[in-house]
Every structure is written in structure tokens, then in C-alpha cells.
Length: 359
Image (cartoon, rainbow, N blue to C red; front, top):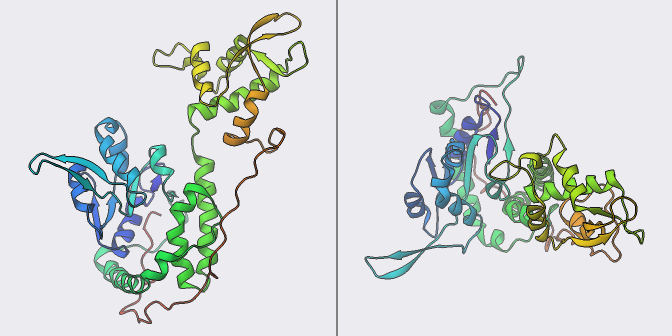
């Protein structure tokens, strides 16, 4: 996912470089889901390149749900789309897997970016200079490099298919980066270290810039409310009345809760309960001392597990025997085994004039 905050940041130029160096590029700025399904529905799919992706997922997002579903499913193999073939009177399974690069302004849907290596572009500042990229002059050298890479990778496909590289990240980020790290290990030299460093840095940058979902934001804001109120029930257990919690949430000027909901009337006690129920957090009749008396409220202990799992603080809230986090996988073989790049000599230089003019 190549994204930029504004125009003229080099995203389309980077996509040009990707097009010249990737396998079987299929580039588009507008395509029907049916056309894309048919184009990539093979055992050896092309690389799908989409420029101006923000126009697909912006105001016209509802009309492109099928395309978003395809991109989500295409993150891995064996996630076919199922359609009814009226002419043949049978169910048709269409493969959705395809390597893809999308370029656009602003953030893409969470379900897209969560499955992507996100590359954030910036406009060139005054005084910064780069070598210009010229398609007619520079793309032949890049295409020659692409042919070398294709030959090298196809010759070593068996090794890549069975590779289990040690990953510095986990879960979906590991799924996304594993093929790239496996290729880096195959290349040897400094590539294994560079790939893992890029994996860690870009994943951290993506996660740091990600906008949390409403539920995650609610969990974090509830934690702040508990700390601000610091109330306890008549047995000394930390708790907060529902009305007080709602007041704290709705009066935060930087939070969305004062105008939450389709009508913009603000977060209600019922909606609060529905959102928190997803984390098995439910209100109870709690007897407070002082002015609160016995009212509906929430115990802090019921939030602890959700806080530690979904929005951990720098010092997570202790909770008895907390589950141990899984550890990054260990490599099944030593990374850095060098298999030369086909021992091919490039037909012409491939390192000049490839930088986007506005990157």
C-alpha cells in the first residue's frame, strides 16, 4: 500500500517503478470487480497494480465492496470467490490470490492496510533533489532486472515454498512479510538483516499511525475515566457508575462520544453496554459509598483482560496469571544461504535514474 497525504508525493512514480520490476503487471485506475476476478483467476496470476485507489474506497466505497472483498481475500491462497454460473448451471470457484500494490491519497480501509506493507510517501522539501525518472529511458533497464529476478526466483521456487524464516513480527504482519523475508534469506549477503529491519520499522510505523476502531478507542477512554474518577464500591473494589463513565466519555473534547451514533446525539448507556459486551464486559448493580449509592456501574477488574489484550498501557494492568505472549517463530534453517541471482550479468545498468522525481 503506497499512500501519501497529498498529491505530488511520488506515489504514482513509485508505482511506475514497481510496474517495471514486478512479474506480469496488470495496472489500472478503474476496473469492474468482474473484470479483475477474471484477470487474476489463474494458477499463475499477474501482479495487480491500482493507482488512485482512494477514489475506489472514498465516496464510492459502497459500490466497490466486491473489489475490497477481493483484495482482502487475495491476501493468501485458497480463498476463492464463489459464483453461480447460470449458463453451466453450476457453482464456479474463482481464485482471488494475487500480489498487489495500491497507490492512493490518505488511509485506505483498515481491512486493506492491515494486510499490507504500508509505504508512506512525502513531498520533496525545498533543497532536496533527486534524479528524475524517465519512462522511455529507465524502464528498459528495470524490465531487464525483472526478467533476471523472475528466472532466479522460478529456479529456486521449491526452496521458497518450504522456507520458514525467523520473523521479527507476529500474526498477520508475519504472514504479510514472510515471502519477502524468505526471498531476502535466499539472496543472502546483507539482505536478511535489511529485510527484517524494514519489516520491524514499517510495521511499527503503520501500527503507530493506524486509527483505532471505535471499540478500541472506547476501551482506552474508559481506562482514562477510571483513573480520573478513582471510585470504589463499599468493599473497596475499583468501580465507576455508568452515568459518571458516560459523562467523562462525552465531555472529552477530543473524543467522538459527544456526537456518537447516526443521529449524532451522543453515546448512550445502552450503546455503551453493547460495545463493551463484545469484550465480555457488562454492567452490574453496584453499591457505592458516599453520594452515589446503589446504581448501575462497571468494575475495573472486568476491563483488565481487554485492556491488556487490545490497548495495553506501557505498564499493563496486572491480572493474576496472565497468559504468556507467543514468541516470534524461529527459522527452520539458517538464513542467509546464498543462491546467486542466476549468475546473470545485467544487460545494462539498473541503478541510475530510478528515483521518483517527487519522492
